[in-house]
Every structure is written in structure tokens, then in C-alpha cells.
Image 1 (tube, rainbow over the protein chains, first blue to last red):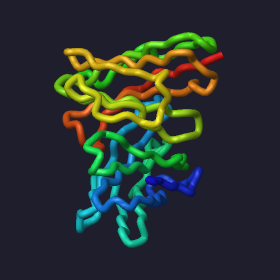
Image 2 (image 1 turned 135 degrees about the horizontal axis):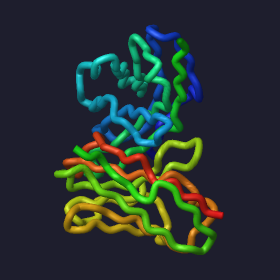
Image 3 (image 1 turned 60 degrees about the horizontal axis):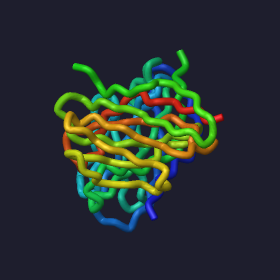
Length: 116
Length: 113
């Protein structure tokens, strides 16, 4: 069965510092995608970054980078130069390519608080 | 351009009632997915529709149903509401049927009393 585990219920980071949010996953499928979404208090989920299981290089999108370690089945999100607006819930998610659908499995999330 | 819009934003129902939630995708997006997010949890996949056909269904009872209209908007229907159906219902649209890059609305918060 597919599973996403986020072991950090809450994290604090000083403004302008970097922070790493942990995510481990479990699947026996060889082809999958890993995603990170941000959920502010408004409720909408905002796509941040994507990593395919066959991608050789770690994904980066501006201040976001994904530390993909396939053998360890981890896909940690690194946010550099934290800003106050980064305070939100962060969810790691996985999609199995064989489904051919937009069925994402989400973790339970990590609440990030950026301290001025 | 307008993002994904959902209505209503908040609603309160009693057990046994029926609810209809509506979603308008981003213009040009043909895929709509529905997710349920219970307080303190991550979203859970309910349905996906692409070009008016069901493309995926999560592990939800038959009380949950959905459809997509010719203009690609969508409705999620829940019958015989239970207390456990209280949640934030999120709609997401995308260009393709098999991408994880979804564009979410702000959700409909349902409270069942």
C-alpha cells in the first residue's frame, strides 16, 4: 500500500534561515511522482515542486528544492531564506504513474512557523 | 484569470441530509478532482473527472457521487450525511488527466451536526 509519512507536526525557523521538512514514502511501484504543496490558512493547496522517480537530479523551484534520496525513500523539502509568508502547513504527496489519474496520496503535514 | 472557484464556502447540515458542492475549474482545464480534508489530516482523494468521464475513484462509500458538465464544472454530492463527513472539501483542476500539478480552490467547509 502507498503511504506518505511526515514525522514533524510543527517546525520553527528564523526569518532568512533555511529549513528542511521531512518526508518519507512507501510504494512498490517503480514509477511515481513526489510533490510538495503549501496550505495557508485560506485553505487552498498551492503546488510548490515536483520530483519524478526517474529524475536523476534533485528538483529546484526558486527558494524550494527537493532532496530526493530514492534508496532511502525520502523526499525532503528545503526552503532557503525563509520569509514570514512561508508560515503555513506543508504537505508531501505521491502519485503513482500507473493509475493514469490525479490521485495524490498526502501525508499529515508539517506546520511551519517563521519567526521574525 | 480566475482560479478554481468553489461554492458554497461554508455550510452546515444535519445528519441524514444531502449536500451538493460545486466547482468551476480554471478556464481551459478539463480535469477536476475532489478531495476531502478532515481536520488535522492531509487531503484524501475522492473522485477525478476528465472530459466528463470518471477517471479515478477513491475509497469512499456510494453515498458520495460526482459529475462533470459540458463546461467542465463539477458537482460533488453526498447523501445521508454522517458526522464524520464534516471536513473541508477541496476541488482541484488541471490541464491533463495524469498530472500531480493541481490547482486547488479554497474549499467548501462542511459541518454536519
